[in-house]
Image 1 (tube, rainbow, N blue to C red):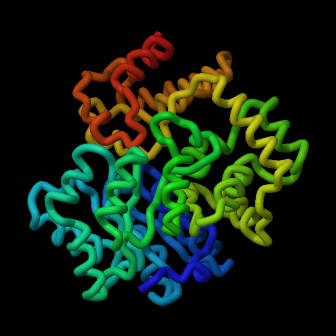
Image 2 (tube, rainbow, N blue to C red; image 1 turned 90 degrees about the vertical axis):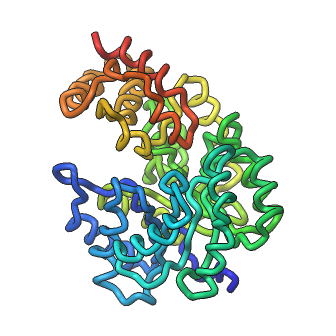
Length: 373
């Protein structure tokens, strides 16, 4: 069954950064966001087995599945290679996902974070592509694809070996076009040349492209004074040919409202606006930043309970605004709730699961020197 691109909403609701209250997902807030999103006619929801420590799929059940007819929305989730220790785990995880989400099938199913090294090796070892196709034949999933964090060379190898792939989800934003680790421009070109539908993740790079130094934001505001900074990042990727859906991990109703505004009567990026985006990209890249997207894959297994993304968020803020007292207060709260940057014991758990392949141990040492004074 080919994906009907005309039925795919350009804005997808990513369920990775849902609002929380007391450390748990705020379901009532999520319900309001779901209702607002569904009211527009958009209906693509993306979750995963590991999001919110395993509770994102449950939130999808409570806020969406129980409250809307099954045929009125599309739900995507993912199989995590790092949770597969033996072949029986694959079926166990899938059945658990169906139970968590309260569904009999998933519209889109992804092998999570295919990349060079162990993840792809595990998917090949257990023949997960064939397993997925069997689920498709059984009606348990409608479309099979994968999310990708690897090299362009491996992407070509995977696509050549698995022509059954119906879509691929990649990290794509205007800042990562030439990033030597992400190499998103190359990944995009490979997929577009093969006419493989693209789902975009991290279009705003974990919020990095939603708020900038005032002098940088002024460039955007001079052209579109009534539009948010984040809207530029979303419009950039949504304007690219071959992009099927752009995922936004929205955490508040205000973010939802702003994104809906961006995609209502959508305007592709013009040549003049592209010039501004290129200028902004050059300016941002001139400021050294830690390339953390706050996916939080690193936090559940940290033995010292360090909120690593929040530490890096503080560092990035202080690199741009050295005297920002709010960032320092923010870090004080982070350290009070969990570990300080200097508490890192160098176990490497975090580096093993980081999609951005960051040298987290070394970065935490640098952060400690800046913050733990």
